[in-house]
Length: 214
Image 1 (tube, rainbow, N blue to C red):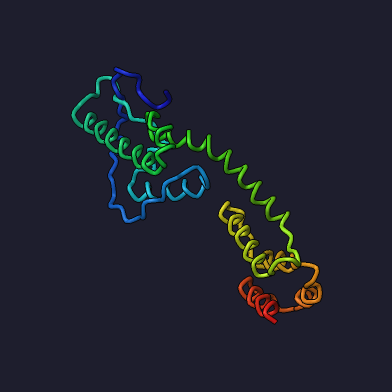
Image 2 (cartoon, helix red, strand yellow):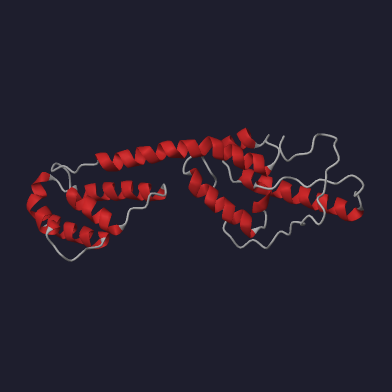
C-alpha cells in the first residue's frame, strides 16, 4: 500500500521530519456528505482540516525511521504522526453519512480515504453537471402557468447550476429570463429587450411581478 509501511516493518522517519501541531479549530464542521455535491463538501472539509493543521495528511506519506536512527526523538515524531493521521482519518470519516462511513471505514489512511472518495464521486458530480445544464437549456415558459412561478423554477435551476461551479453572471441570467418569457408576453419581452439600461436579476423579477399583477 503506497506510503504505508508493511505490517511488522519498522517505520522510517525522515531526518527533521515536521511534527504535526493541531491548531485551535474555529471553523464550522461541514455538513455530512451523503453522495451529492462532492466538490462543495470536499472544499469545506479541506478548509476545516486546514484549520486543524491536518490537511497535509491527505497528500503526504507516512514518515519512516532510517536504519540506525531509531532514537527517542525519531520515535516521538512517529508517534505524533500516527496520532495526527488517526485524527485526520476520523475527521474525514465522521464527515460522511452512516451508509458511506460503512463503505470507507476499512480504508487504512486518510490519504487513501480521500483519494477513494475522489475517484468515486467526482465522476458522479460530472454526471450531475450535465443533468443541470440540460435542465437549463431545455427550460421553456408557457402561457398556461403563472410567469412568477416559472421564474422561481428557473431561479432554482440557475442556483443548482451555480452550486455545481458553473456560475452564470447577472447579465446572462437576465437575458435568459427575458428570452424564456412565454408567447403571451411577446410585447413586454420586446420592450425589455430594447431597454438600454441594464437590469439586475432582482430588478427584472420586480418588473415581471408588477407586470403580471397588472
